[in-house]
Length: 331
Image (cartoon, rainbow, N blue to C red; front, side):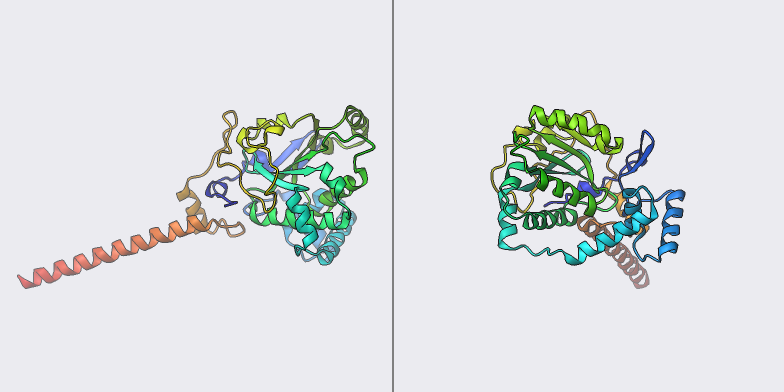
């Protein structure tokens, strides 16, 4: 089961939805019950009116943020996205199946906000013979994660562990890794919460120190170079991470595909998140406030069961009252 009931009971705080970082505003959530600011709504309407674009407001806002609200670049990004959607093939074939089963990319656990933790193995990327098949495999994997492991308005981001496996400058598949990162940033906008680049050589760390001076702060803030993603343990229960990454779960050597949940223990003592109660969720559903969300079938079954029980109880009371009247008439 990839979506536990407690996932549906988590709704991010306002401080987690729209984050201020230096001179930037970073929006983490776009879908479901999420409300946009007045300025965001104005930008969406202006863009739609200017270009007559018929897209969901949340999709347009994703693209606006990705292009820093530059309308011409946003329009180009949408066109490129549409072309990509039409051209890609999401059918699992023997070659993509093999790459996914090898663990070129796989899911292992979640942080305490239920964000999926995705691992990219650079050594296995280097062994892939066809970059286009590799990108197709990654797309199949990420679409599976989006559909089966995430919730609009509640779980919209993932965490990436990019394991370079100690590869140096010469052995690193730089071109392939660049294409992968560009592929992710172009086609899966505002999805990456953090990227931990680990097991890298000292030379690569020095190279990154030079490169990041030319990047925007918002990009640098998302990417962390570490020997092991130890800082991830500030936000993830150790049971969610493999031992080689500082956790206590067994290292994974097989069964990479399809993704599975690792442990039901997601929370950490220093950063407990608040979940709403089940009756509160049912009430939101009854009020129509979850119309754009993915609904928890188990909770709705519970609500319908309670309704049926209530109807049976009322019917029983009515029958008891009717029987009482008949008894009175017999006297």
